Image (tube, rainbow, N blue to C red; front, side):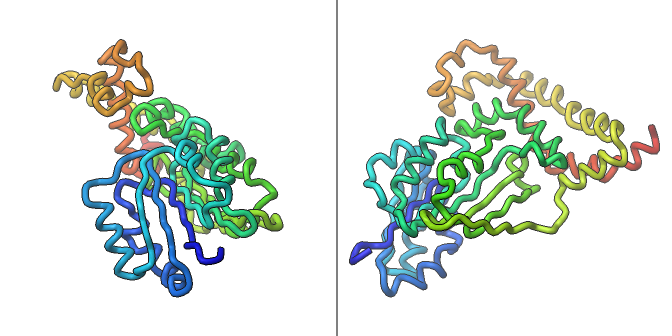
Length: 313
């Protein structure tokens, strides 16, 4: 690298710069800051919260005086075109490729600006349930059912996208997979199915799998299906559908204009025709999304009480 700084790009840094403010860079930066200056650039499609940039710089300066940090708002493909080939030594990408229009193009740009012969690409992504993950069929159904609503309300976020496959296709045999983990985060429903990998670019192709042994909520769902079958499915469907109508009626009674709400948050920039949509229909979609917020409680409750319901039926 000569005398130039170590260059790090964090894509999806978040409106609160959470990795910096939680001190997750501190140990790594401390180990190299005596010999290298560090240039950290954070990118996100949403703006930073007020005061976050200054707080993030304060956190970095307390531990490392030779770390520079700046934030750039935008999406990976458009922003990366301003950087030369092999510019960054390390790129971190967190929960962002779900929102870009063309993940293959974005990943090719990431690969282009990542230094050859040792540049490191690490990511954490929520992904679609794979066809061979039969224990997660209910989660897959939820991903497919809510994908359109999620894209409308969450900055084009796709619930059912095989992002890890896109990454493998772009980086392929040109990188070493240092660590790879696929896991379920129950508390992050509906983006529970996630994967993380640390790749070294342009070395031999090896793979190390890291698997968690803890039984997930989705494995418990499989057990409930195996034992109670259609009683469990019917009970879950009733528990899921029952709140939707009251929520929708409440939104209608309070006079919520769903179209105006989506225009306020900027959805009309993506879908110009949204002003012609039926407000009651939009309220219905919002009611479904609100209903899904209760899934973190509803699903464990259904699983735990299914044996009792089965005895009654």
